[in-house]
Length: 227
Image (cartoon, rainbow, N blue to C red; front, side, top):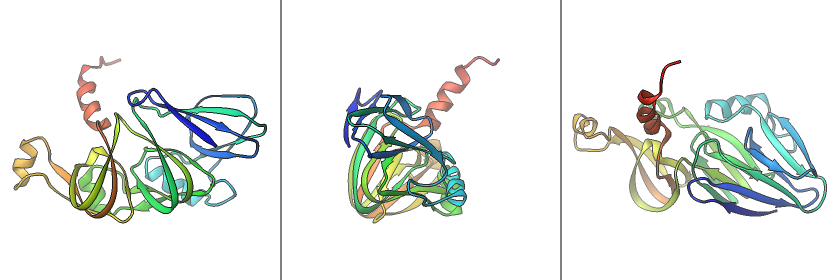
């Protein structure tokens, strides 16, 4: 499978060129357009039968859909166009026998060799970070596509790094994080508009998005007319 990322970073879409027998698993609703030589299977299981109702429910708690769409090329030289629901960027990540933890709703698509599951981040972290209790866990080998709100940038963490909770896209499972206040005091952090943040520690790669949907929603909501 070959890929090309178009219209980056504000309105990104991914163009996938596939040969007969090649498959890709996508988020429900990610398909924009495709050539006629594809078969489409919608199921709660990973391609090949792994998973089921339990993993589908866990994905829902992580902010993803219960179902997965599997696209398989039935002829040579087929093209599939996919994109995220929000305006933003798409990142291609070549997973090679490792594990990447992905923020809920940031997983877009992945190759058949990648297991899509959900991992528990803990009640306390979920409560204070403002995010879901589960995050998507991607492990195995193959092409992985992630999406963001705004552009995506990479941070090489070696020690400690602080990120606002709404700006995390994904991170290596070698990194640990805890929830803490941005300033020296909680009151000062809240008054300064920062509140609680994620403090990562260890060594690994962290991927962040330049904007976050909750802040955008708070600005946009009061401007919308009631129906």
